Length: 383
Image (tube, rainbow, N blue to C red):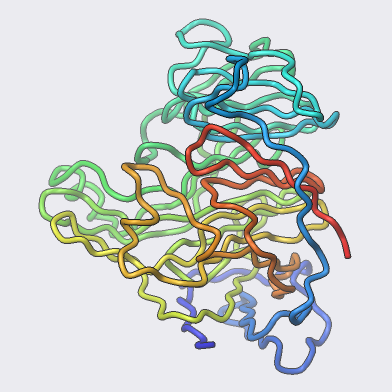
């Protein structure tokens, strides 16, 4: 296994107590402190070849062959689970949220297409808080808060000062704060390049309150001009752990960050790869594809970070990864890699199916299929 170089961050940060760690098993990882930030370089999994968790299939909700229209969904963008085990699936193509009970029985439809109360234009992400309130990201900058029965509580906008492309990734930090960003490839052209090249870098993530005010920024990416289009080297996944700590896994860089709820960098960790790390590459006129590394992430109730890690790089990513603007990953070229809350690699678990997106709530892992018409539920079983 070839260990790839870790791209070092330039920003300094005070080391946090949550990164304190007992001495590792010899040779499994090394660590260093760079400008006050702890970096963990994993060399081998703590669990060896015997993972201490497994995935047990529970059910699949949704099918294009279903007789009941409530189970026929189009362009699923997200899924969440409430305190009672009810499952909410964001059926973006039909501008609705489908609510099912823990056994997958249809309960209700929340929302519809429109501009009125509890109506959506293009819902693209879904979050839920401890009181089972739903937070719907609608188009680029609009957010709608609903109770569990679908009654609108309020809505707000964050303006258009945050650059994004197609769909922002957004997660709820707590009942008062959200974070958005992580999926920006290229927009605009000469005008935007002139405007943003003056600062040279752009923040990948923005933290904002429920009044729509930006309260913090973190993560940077290069800006460059490819032909007539502005190109951003940003693509990352973010998830919030119990307690509010944030984890960011980068698609094209072998690094995962742990940050506090205000975005402060706590520690950075990587893992061994069996292919070369290329960083981000892009060209609008020539098919040049970067070597993807992370393809999804979520955090379970034990504060373990599940990262979808690519294990093999096909010669042409376009054949397996890109379908228009939709990204997916095959199970034969990826696996789940599990890290503890301090970034130590625990072990790996096979990806049970091809996937578009994963979410974890408690001991349940949900996978949105590549066609985005169904959601599979798995139980996380401790061994």
